[in-house]
Length: 251
Length: 254
Image (cartoon, rainbow over the protein chains, first blue to last red):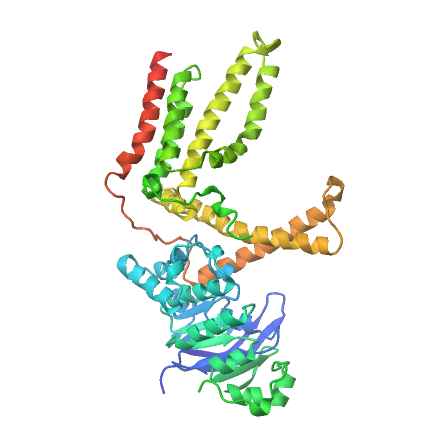
C-alpha cells in the first residue's frame, strides 16, 4: 500500500470556549484519489480542513501529509504540501495582480527567477487564466477569481488540493467550467461541498461528517443513494433527482 | 460598480511616458515636486518654466486637458484655505479692488496655489500614465519598505470590496424603509460603520489565514526582478532636472 497523501488519525478539536467541533476524526486519502467531504452547516467541515495545513492545531490526534506529520517544526513544508483553496476568492487573492498572487505561494518557499515565472505560467495555464495574468483580481468575475484561486495553490505543487465549496455562488456555466478544469488536473483532491451532483461528478469517494464525526465513508453514488443516511445527516439531492437512478459518476 | 475606483486616475493609451518604468517615473515625479517646493515664491518665471514642463509632459503622454482639470478638483479645499489668508492675514495691508488685503497673506495664498497646483498636477500625470500595481512595484524597487507597499497594496485591493459591502448594507437599509441622510440619524450610520469595521476585521483574519496557508512567515516575498532599460533614467530625470535648474537659478537670483 502506498503512503497516504493525507492521513487524519483520531483528531479532536474544541474551541477555546469549550465548544467541541471535531470528535476522533479518522480517515485517509490515497494518492490520486478524489474525495468529497459532505455534511450539513456547522458539521465541522471548515474546521477540519483548517487542520490539514496547521492553521488550527489540535492537542489530540494527528494529521500526516504524504508521510510528514503536521507538527510545529514541519508546519512550513506541510503548508506547501496541502494546497488550500478558500471559499471566498476575495480572501485568497490579496496581491495587486493575478501574476503576483500566483507567485506569492512559491516565492514564500524560495522559488525565484525563471522557475518562478514557469510555475506561474503553468498554474495559470492549467486553469485557463493566463490571459488575465497582469490584471488586478478584483476586476475579474467570481468564476475567474475562483479559477485563479486554484492556480495560486497549484503553483506551490502541493501533494493534495483541498477545496472549500468550490462551486458556491457560481452561475451554471462557471460551475461547469470549473468542474472541467478540476477534472483535468492530475492531483489528489479533497473537496468540501454542499453541491451533491458536483461531488458525484468529480469525486469517486465521499465522506459524510456530522456533529464533528465521520459517519460514512464510501463510493459517492452509494452514499447519495442511501436515503436513510442522507436524511439522518441533513443531506438532500436537488429536487427531481431520484436516488434509485443515481448513475456512478467518476470511478 | 467594479473597475471604477482604482482606474479612475489612469488614462489608457500608449507612448513614451507610459513606456517608462514605474520606479523611474515615481522618482522623477518626487524630484520635480521637490524642485517646485524649493523654488522661492517671488520667482514667478521659474514657476512658469515648471508649468510649461508639466504641460509638455502631459501633452507627450496624451492626457486630455479636461481630464487633468477634473482631477485638479482635489485642490478645492486648499484653494478655499488660500483665499482666506489675504483676508485674515496680519501685517501691512495693500489695496486690491478696494479691499485692504494682507501682503503676507497674499504671498501665502500665491505660494499655496502655485506649489500645490504644480505638485498635484505632477502626481496626476504620473498616476494617469502608470497602473496602480506598477506604482506599487515601482515603490518596491525604490527600496520603500515592503511593509509599506504591502499595506498600500492591501488598501487598494480591499477598497472595492469594502465599498461594495458598504453599498449593499445601505441598499439593505433603504429596502427596509430607512434612508439616513441627516446628522440626527447618525445612529444608523454609526451602526453600519461598526458592522463594516467588524466585517473588515474578520476578513483581515481570513486573508491572513489564506496567506499563512501559502507559506507566509511575516515577510512579503520579492516578486519583481525586472531591470531598468538603459536610458530610462536619463529620459525621465531630464524632466525634474530642468525644473531644478529653474529653481536653482531663482534661488541665486533672489
